[in-house]
Amino acid sequence: MKVRILTLFPEMFNGPFGTSILKKAQEKELIDIQCFNIRDFALNKHKKVDDYPFGGGAGMVMTPQPIFDCHHHVTQMLNLNEPCKTIYLSPKGSTFTQEKAMELAKEEQLIFLCGHYEGIDQRIIDELVTDEISIGDYVLTGGELPAMVIVDAITRLIPGVLSTEASYEDESFHCGLLEYPHYTRPRAFNGLEVPSVLLSGNHKDIDMWRRKQSIELTFERRPDLLKGLQLKKNEAQWVAELSKKKE
Ligand SMILES: CN1CCN(c2ccccc2CNc2ccc(C(N)=O)cn2)CC1
Image 1 (cartoon, helix red, strand yellow):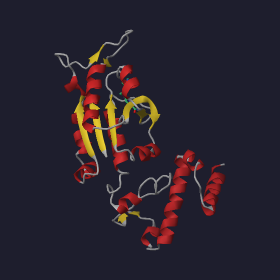
Image 2 (cartoon, helix red, strand yellow; image 1 turned 135 degrees about the vertical axis):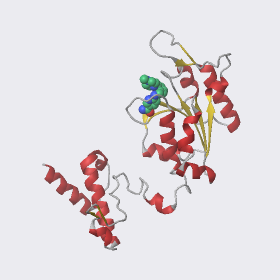
Image 3 (cartoon, helix red, strand yellow; image 1 turned 45 degrees about the vertical axis):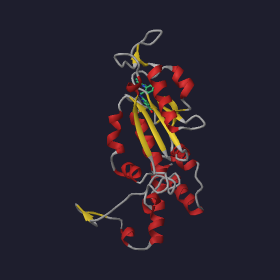
Image 4 (cartoon, protein in one colour; image 1 turned 90 degrees about the vertical axis):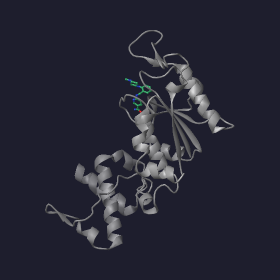
């Protein structure tokens, strides 16, 4: 997969894309991430990329020319015969979910447009943006952090990025339930023990315990996730007991 990031702050991406899973995925050539500095495409002498909003109001708006030319340069280099999916990160977008991540992970190439200031000129959104996405209902300084979040979530889903056992922990494995608690050595830490079932070596009991933990945790913290799930008979029984306890 080719990922192209249009931003005023390419250096922000060095950390996340230069570390751990994302770094390895690039070294294994499973993903090719390139950042482009929108400012490099500004034609005015002072490389200005923002201006006052028509109609007045506080803040500045990113001007269309540098973004348009940067996007054009990137799409030319991608050499596609149809327009490239272009994602604009904004609080107005549709909320990002694991399902959306799985959908985007199937794309051959993606362009991310990171807004700053009060946003970008609407003509860019109308002409170039195919998807407007928000990572949640909160206000950030720019679209860069949302772009990193989305690229991280997508990259994990590309075959070969996660080693097999790691992908086993993947959200889809838990099929929408919250993950069970994790323990590792030592068996006693500050007098705190590990649940004995995990030391039993009985993998049927361990899987049952983990599934029960996931269901109980999801019931407690995210009952909305339980609504859409197909539970086995005994699991539905657990939920019924939890509901009774709650009354
Ligand atoms: C005070 N305004 C500053 C500019 N901003 C804005 C407006 C348009 C595009 C990008 C931004 C950058 N901010 C973002 C971006 C994404 C998210 C998200 N939830 O995905 C939250 N914030 C809106 C808020």
